Length: 258
Image 1 (cartoon, rainbow, N blue to C red):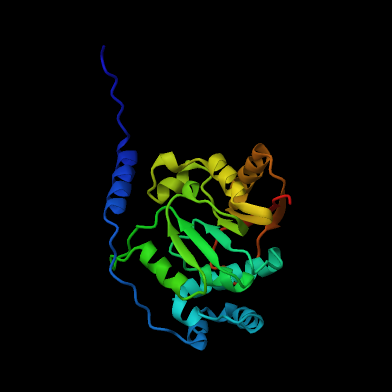
Image 2: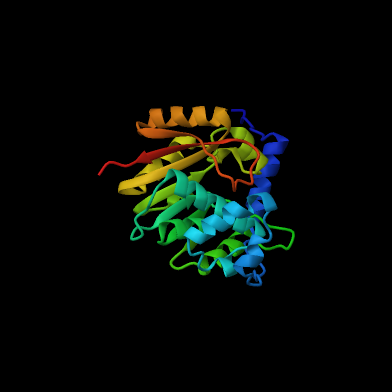
């Protein structure tokens, strides 16, 4: 019998090889950041958004941010905190939260301050490196250690177990293009399976907040919720004066029945 040979297309093969390499070499140089006072971090913001940032900081105690945040993380943490204030209301500080696809954990401070409780951030591509050779994981662990009870989890969402009171999911991969732009193998494109598993991680009465980029992805997300049998409330376009992003974002909120 003639054996059928299957070849990956060059670009797919390159992504698969890069994935294998960065997960085979996980060591990272240590991360160290000089603590920056809140006033210094506020000065890193564009002048146009500084009043909104100062107002938000006045409503919340940004404990631990001086050590946890660099300029980018500070801006993204403020944005996430503002979005949750506007669209998610209040949270139960006694229940742990989960952020799916947390990158390098840079906005964990915003999540933790909003809820007042501990958070986990899970990231599949945690061993991606910066020009300093440090990894996302090293930076995420640095941020998490500065925040009471927070953890950075390097791994696959599908391997995670637990009961979370609130789950955030910013820009899930719903189609191949963004997945490939981030250099991930195509086998990780499984939006329905990931959504189903994320739903099982919610404690009864817990909430899932999903933020999508662009109208097309929002339509895909709505269809995905419907296919999964999850009742999700469309939040419409997500607005924040602290947004550092150019493309419009849209949100959905779903609560697991008690």
